[in-house]
Image (cartoon, rainbow, N blue to C red; front, side, top):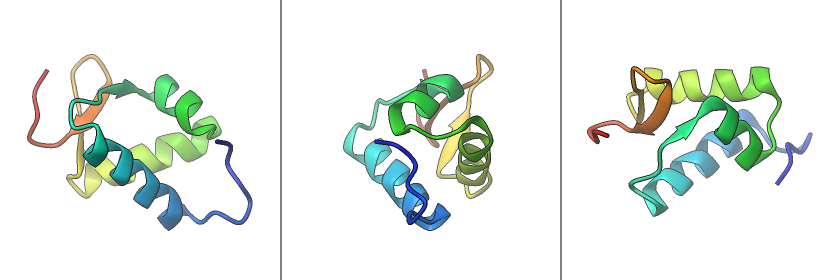
Length: 72
């Protein structure tokens, strides 16, 4: 899946939330998330930062993103 000009940031946030809820043990680095969803680096960084800020995701010390409340 590649970033589509018609997709809004809200659409991407909903997609990422759905993926993490569907696969609760999912842990991704920024680069992995970028490749998985076909996002450019800046968009991916903003999206992950927003999901961390909203406390949906948390970033681990080794820069992996996982559902908040989960541990690795």
